Image (cartoon, rainbow, N blue to C red; front, side):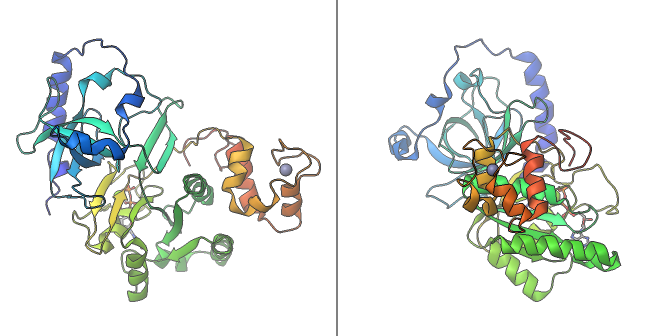
Length: 384
Ligand SMILES: Nc1nc2c(ncn2[C@@H]2O[C@H](COP(=O)(O)OP(=O)(O)OP(=O)(O)O)[C@@H](O)[C@H]2O)c(=O)[nH]1
Ligand SMILES: [Mg+2]
Ligand SMILES: [Zn+2]
């Protein structure tokens, strides 16, 4: 299938620029987000008015691409509309960077409105409502560090992808993703890719990786290793089984092989994979989060590699709960408000000392709680 989304981009971007200079959006009264968000149970009424249910498949600054969803989870990814948000909402205050995230369920009205981006090839619609999100994966907007940037919503599982090397695995980043999944109550799986390159590594590094993998497996997370460029039949089967029927989001650092993995699942739109030398840095091959139908059943949200990944500040109560191994100790500390740092009679630090909680994971907990990056010596580093 042709990648209609990206082939249209240049043209649209130019037009967007033009329209931006021409149109001055009227200063309308702020309309609360609560009016925009509508439970799906009340959508039937609005279908009668000509509105239709759709799923956000790609988000851009002033428009989004949506696909119709005539019945739940039956997303017609070949039926693409160019959508803009209803004008009355554009001035509303919001906590989030974008109105939409990939995976959002929305109610649309066919047609376009003054000043919105249009395309000769795609039908237009106006997004009038969004359903509340069953789950979301969000970070702090790296531009402002205040607003939330929702990367994707309504997913059933998070697939955390890392490569052993090129780029080297960052366990701290994996822990951050695990926190997000635990908070949202969604299943998380870790895939370690580029297994083929591991052979050239020092034995100490290989041992170190094995130790980490053991920690995650013992915590109950599924850990798969593969070479996405040339997987064994068993690996391929396992990966296909993992993605089957679910709405999965693949996330991880740039260049780890997320799109290469998606391509093993017979995606409707083949994903672009970095073609240059794997040592080249600083370029994202996937530039937009995209909602894709899989030939093996299910859907995947392929995302651009993340470079900046700050989590919103969390209380130690919330954060420690997201470290699954800490849960049994949480109400056993002397102080109810214990942060599990250096408080006396802390059940968590005692468990670390006794070897019941891994020291590596505990360090990650401290790093996230204190706002450090996971990289030593730099505080609030955004490049992890
Ligand atoms: N040696 C080796 N290279 C791989 C493997 N999987 C992917 N690659 C290569 O790694 C590079 C990056 O792969 P992509 O699939 O584009 O990575 P990505 O995670 O989608 O990257 P972004 O879209 O930038 O976030 C490409 O050159 C791939 O060919 C693997 O298992 N082994
Ligand atoms: Mg990619
Ligand atoms: Zn404690």
